[in-house]
Image 1 (cartoon, helix red, strand yellow):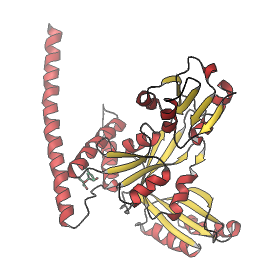
Image 2 (image 1 turned 60 degrees about the horizontal axis):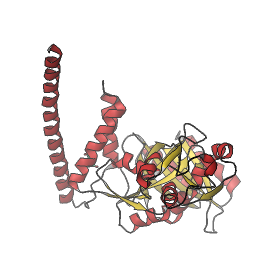
Image 3 (image 1 turned 45 degrees about the vertical axis):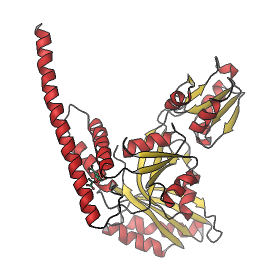
Image 4 (image 1 turned 180 degrees about the vertical axis):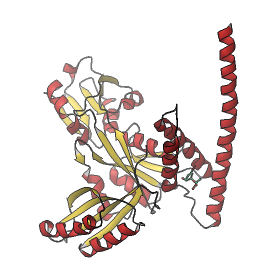
Length: 362
Ligand SMILES: C=C(O[C@@H]1C=C(C(=O)O)C=C[C@H]1O)C(=O)O
């Protein structure tokens, strides 16, 4: 009886707080709508998304958090609040490498929250096209995996696309073997994206040494296909693909590296302002790979700008032997970065800034 009363009192307090939270959320939404009005008055387009501002809001929340809610949880909740506020200004269309249930969809959701309109697109090239043709405001594509390296399809599209990098998302990746087989012995074919096949190479070699491995455009495409096939077919995909396509989980966490992580890029048509903790991606070419590369990178080293990644790819244009994808820390609007890049540009035969964007917060 006493316990019941105590619970009742606590729940009354929770109800009161919920009322306040709800009123405050509606006030916050109304203010976001006011921001939208001001943006329209200033002649901005109806794309109100500001990744720099959102990153700043999330970082501030995490820094000042005193618990008992974990900072990561607070950020996740506010990610959703901002997503809802933005949708109340104007819903965003975001194209991602599908089909439904793909890791890229999970990355898009993690970055934009649940209130955006997600559009499933069949290839990386089509994600770029959807944004280039303004069928979507933003796109999300995978760019590198911690165990398998770079996704060259994505990098190669930047050589010809005018789009900018507006953000990054990192996602821990766990692979599942999905299908209808009663036992692993019944499986003769395994379908998946080449990256997933590579990330599970050892497990497949140990557990299914005889099967034929068939590469497809995406893991969820593999799950979708396997759903129409007999019990000898299996797919490697994310766990949520099992539910979406009505398949059984035959084995879980089959990736060879337990800390397997994929990094995704958010692409858009516009530049993003500085958020205080940013990265800049460059596309640079030299005529002579070995000698010129050192000169190219000297301005960065001399300005103390840290380079977080360099990747070389064949230029595909014939004029240059190689192009380099370089990631550095800092935003192009910061003076030391701008100065170093000006010098770097002088050393290169082609130079493009693919975008300055906030470092992933979540
Ligand atoms: C409200 C704004 O618009 C959007 C919504 C935001 C929010 O809910 O805090 C932040 C940035 C924008 O994506 C704004 O620009 O401040």
